[in-house]
Length: 204
Image 1: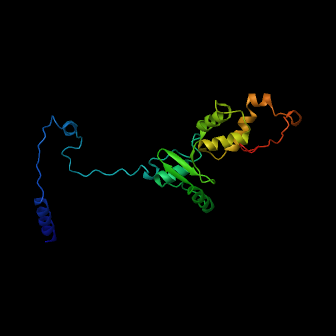
Image 2: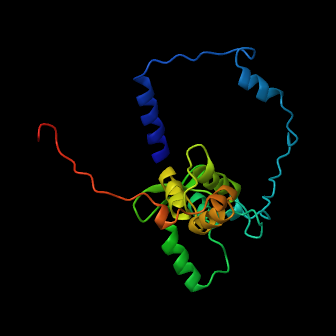
Image 3: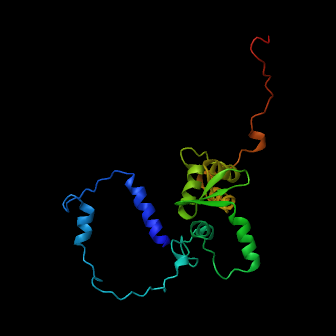
């Protein structure tokens, strides 16, 4: 009985509207025409098909697997934020550390970002992309063959992050041919620094 009342209610509601049904020819409706021409291998088969559950759904859309050497360092964080996937087999201590660290990251498809300690959001990079960014900040057109700390600071200012940035910058400067040839200016050859008196206009 409640179903009938519901049906009558919908009929009364539909009577308040004026609508017109337009029959479109097959040639005019390309999507329906295309779908009607597709072959259906299960046509006239009424038996329900079994669902194949052998594929683990939790690994769907994962960034990559852990064993791969090309796996980015942030793969676990990206998998957690993108598909709520946690790597199995972690100890309690590892889980506590993981959940403490993962709250500083967020996923904006297709990139992972980190909110750093200075409250600046930076994009996480790895592999060859990180090397290219570091090289551009050190010896590119905007680079000035600065030291490791200043090169790392330029990477941070550009909006990128990876955990070994200072170590990689130190290795890059140590292996830079131009930097090793030039070396540091000795203290006796430095220009003397004299204080300059600054006065406003019309102070004289």
